[in-house]
Length: 101
Image 1 (cartoon, rainbow, N blue to C red):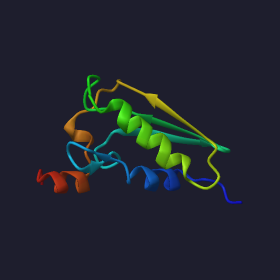
Image 2: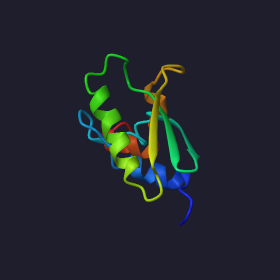
Image 3: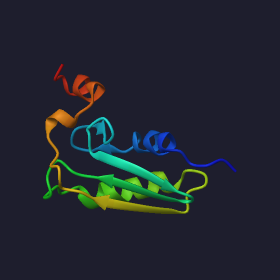
Image 4: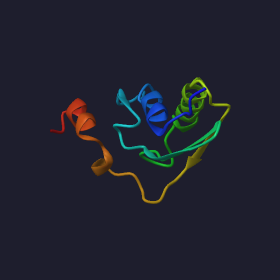
């Protein structure tokens, strides 16, 4: 059995879209970090606003998608509000999708 890598987790997270913008949460800059510890994966993430109406939906999607990676038995999502999200965190690909470049 191979170890789960940060890349495996990030690739999986790219399948989670922000329903309002239609852009994945990695390119949107919502993922602040990924930590793989054996069969446990911790995803540190934020949202564009703490009042995001889709917060619980997106957290559930993260848990489900990462949980499907072979070798992952536990997924922990840590929400972080500091530093606050801002449009500078959007990747070049995300900006292209939003028409910001």
